[in-house]
Image (cartoon, rainbow, N blue to C red; front, side, top):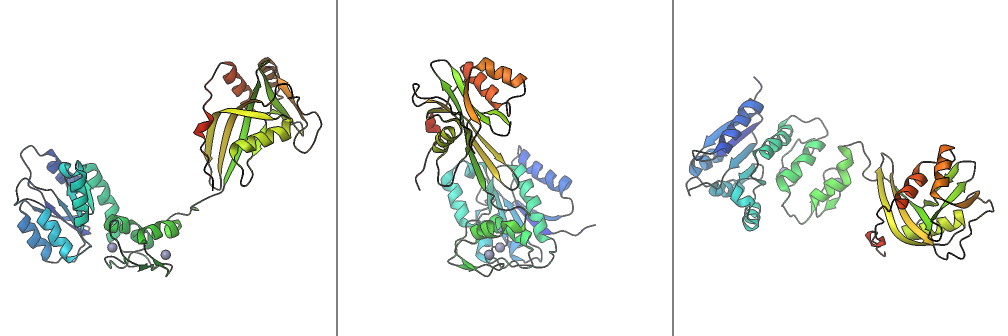
Length: 352
Ligand SMILES: [Zn+2]
Ligand SMILES: [Zn+2]
């Protein structure tokens, strides 16, 4: 039989109809039959005496506020916190979970986790178990409680669970030797990559596209892309330092030769990828001046030219495979069917 990894002290004086207590006991019996050595108490004093007799195993305490002074977990919590930070204390209480002032009080007292959900007790036990497994090198020690021989993933799991409310003036990081005033934030931001083979940030490429409709004849502006790529919405990549709507105006002028007035937003798309993120905003617009909106017909690096198309013409282009993709057709139909155009104000701009 495998030997236990944690001592679990449960101080809980169940009432007759306490289904949570039997749920908790069942949890240990069925899911963790060997990993935890259980000690059950109904009186606070007995539990305090037990925890003061040191065991070699790290300890988890699960307690209630209790119906009477005798069964209250508070003196147990206070006794444990007087002697060490390495005991993980779970306070199970519906009352404390419903009252911010009580929650604040017990957090300040050093309770690691305040919950009313047995499912979350189960979940935290699965997080705690790997902390007591032997760790491969290199190993680190926790600067708050001096728990040593923790692998990086163990340390990374341990710190927020055990010490999320602790404040220290300055701590020297065991991993990079730098001093930090906020150790947990430092671990998370500087060293998280060491638990995952993923970069913590990737570049964001932003694109602005334009569905521009001329009110006088309901035609839509399309760009004829060079290289026989097909007809497409005016638009392109946002330049460094540029706002999305300015990029939409600039690209439409460059590719289609038409100055536009943006009147709304049709869609905002965010696509996360492994090595980059893509943001696309599809704007709705009209010509800035209906009397002066002839499309560009001189080829240049931006495009072969541009046209004002009716919706029917766009359908025909689509059946002849002359569209670069399906989006012009999709959006022109959407506008023709009176689809919603969102207010421009949903795109906030913050000035740097
Ligand atoms: Zn620690
Ligand atoms: Zn560091």
